[in-house]
Length: 382
Image 1: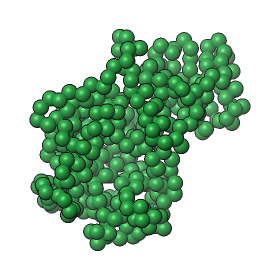
Image 2: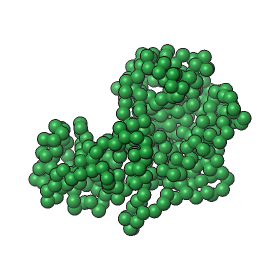
Image 3: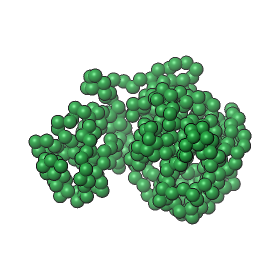
Image 4: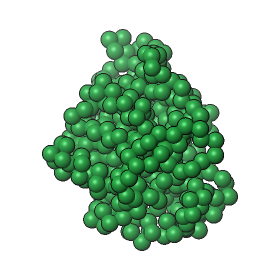
């Protein structure tokens, strides 16, 4: 390590009492120094200190620098390095956070990196829009959808709290399963992060969404390590009808719901059977260490279908939508579901919209029911 870097790290150590890695860093990326570790990341919400090599600043994505405009101050500098103190916005309201999200999106890296452009959104026919995510990947969307499409077209992102969690926790080489992939936003985000060293599976039963997702995967060059399966997951292999609610394409469900006037015949399979199919196709072992489950109230059925398979899995993180009201309407017990998750050796936290996590247990279920809403849970097992 050069003396200037040592000087900067010693200053930070005195300020934050952080244990630092002694490895050399890639200065083409900003290095955020958090409370517990040194790592490269570009998340907006919670960075505390940012260490920048002055001579490498032109190699940093301008949109990354823009994330810190208006909420940072220079707290240390020498001839080579500068340290910015970033004010935490994780506890701020969505209106403030959206300002910084949109600011980060207003720049694009090309031959003129300081040039501001608008997000590309192009209607290409057949109820399909082509646009771009905040992480620079193209995505095909249903132009008639009023759930996900407007947000991704306008902001390039969906559910910032889940998105940020995946950015912080997924890493290159991971195996990610997106159960209930919908338009494939998280499938593409995961593929962008894990790269060719990893593997991604997006499972989406609706034919139109599945078709668009295949195109999104292909246009981004992900086809070699991303599988898009046209199935729903449940507790057994069968055929059922998925019910659609108006133009809320993202809310199609296998449950019987009031106001559903359209349905589609779809195939249901279980997690272990799906993995067998994928392994046969790709001629390789596929063992996920990260799973996202968002199946509009069908989560307990998905869990039942992978109950025995889970016993053999280690080092697994699951991001799951938890909808206790829907479970009760199906005659299922959400309290027992939480108990079964705990008995399987998983810890459970609730992921709040500000990106923080709080402990969740069976006693927390009634609060969710009283709110009339659903929550996102983080399940972890070492």
